Length: 345
Image 1 (cartoon, rainbow, N blue to C red):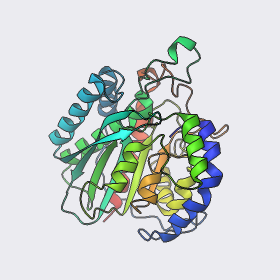
Image 2 (cartoon, rainbow, N blue to C red; image 1 turned 60 degrees about the horizontal axis):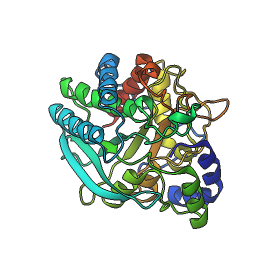
Image 3 (spheres, rainbow, N blue to C red; image 1 turned 90 degrees about the vertical axis):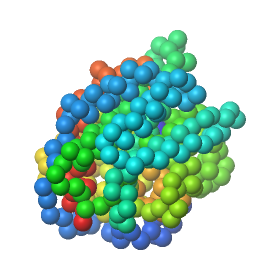
Image 4 (cartoon, one colour; image 1 turned 135 degrees about the vertical axis):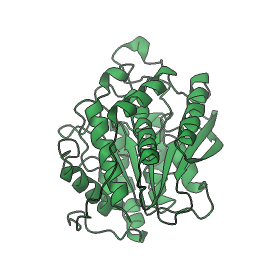
């Protein structure tokens, strides 16, 4: 869920619930958000190819807006399944019917691609792959009912995951952990006012009808019985020019050790201009359900303006297309995650 009004409204009623969840989680053991954990050794990791990631983002956009129940959505889903299989992943398709904010039933599909599926210690990386059906933040009134191209808000995270899978497949040395890439569906079909009211009415639960339906379904219906992961990472809007990723608020409450590990790794790789050491806003996004329901410490790498707390300027507009996608940003995110994966033993 990525809406400034909703972000503000959900912060206070959710805070007590989040703190309770964080206190119950045990893997990995969390430190205080202000305490820097010991830095892991930097082991050799393969190179992340930003040109390849850019091409994967572009290919998704060329299918058209990936709005559920449309041909572009089906075609893109089939493409993602085929590409992950091409990269040697074991792919699980999780088909379900989602009820969105206005009561409509939506055919949806989570896509989970696993590397080294037999490994007991696992890390998951995720992103939503659907597009918002209405560009309600567009400055042109006629555009507000048109679907968003969603190059940055969706496709960028999936493009990074595809390149991560390709890079690992091509590498002579594999990471010492199992890796699951999760493409969450129906993240962006909510209505901000409806979701806000439902959230406030329920005062601290996340079972409101709004955004993040795919991640909530997965957390309640894990793709493998007894599935667990050491930690999870959500990628949201990770491809725009000049992006900054401050430390998102719920991530710091629920999984500060994971945040600090990733941000310190980025710094050691020279990407501090992207992964800024500053607090960010609290965003109700696809990392909440894995934390609250599946009890997996999960963080959100999401672009936020460090001055205003807002999202990138083309958010939920027709301008969210390839003109905003920057290879340097994709490189910073992808290489950092590769290093994090290879640092794990």
